Image (tube, rainbow, N blue to C red; front, top):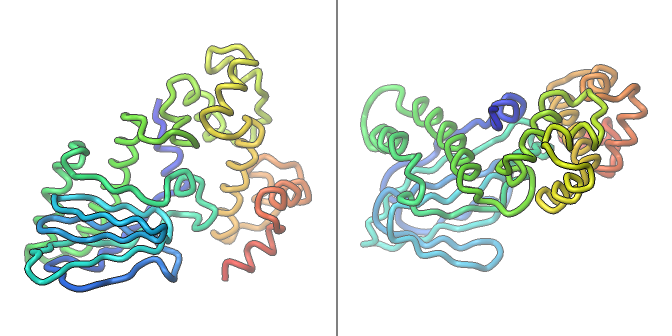
Length: 273
């Protein structure tokens, strides 16, 4: 059972490396734009000040991961020996991406705590501080692989307490979630999903809500709307989108869409610019 491939098939990530080398000074991120960020501290130390007022002093190789735009600032003084590699992140579907939305505003982790990344990081740092041709393109792909490996780490270690990824990390709920992810057109019932999870209907419904924060019905609607947002951004006509995500008509899609986003599909698409 592959818990990530369907998600990444719909909502993959694109990385754009924008910095590698010695860093000294102050730089702010996440104030504008639609991209997330990832910063890798390869050596030295750096201060990381978050939009929520928290402050981190990183003095060992570390990862700072922002899946969505989030205000933060990097600070380093002369003599800190700071060596950074940084990239922007853009998940498919933009603001409608259920995968990015399931992640916290940020994660800050020492690299030693994520051994799964070791081989990729060795290659990425070699490219970042080397002189090989095509290094930027290679680094972009390695950053994208890093995100997938980080998601694997979170699932394997149950790194999130609630939401989609917490559900996928649960051996019973993951079966039901995969069914909804793989076949959103099907009118899934709680009884069908409970059977897939080998649980009673009542136990499944209670456990599903406790872990994901939503009822199974709400989750299915949220997943369908997220898929619809991606298809709309891809230029698909609304009748096609409605059929693809399991609604019998554009008006049925519009009702679900408005319930989750506060706007109609056309209004939402216009607002995306």
